[in-house]
Image 1 (cartoon, rainbow, N blue to C red):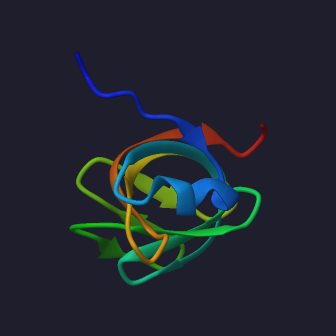
Image 2: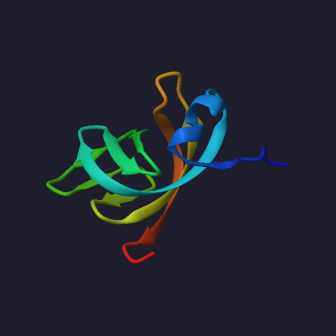
Length: 94
């Protein structure tokens, strides 16, 4: 059985360092290997294997567009960023 991944938001990051979590937020900014999303506060999502374009970052499994909502599954790092494992695109109208 897989480990549980609690659904959290930015204020709950500190209590979940080192754990796998789920978080839903809206992409505000894309730069290099990170996405900044708003989930009751800004959260930095650490992306791997990225291909930058003007408004989009692509990882092995996901595309991120500014203004869209995503569910992120990943591990909370000591700096309160999240290293992404997977994501789901929820679109722009939720």
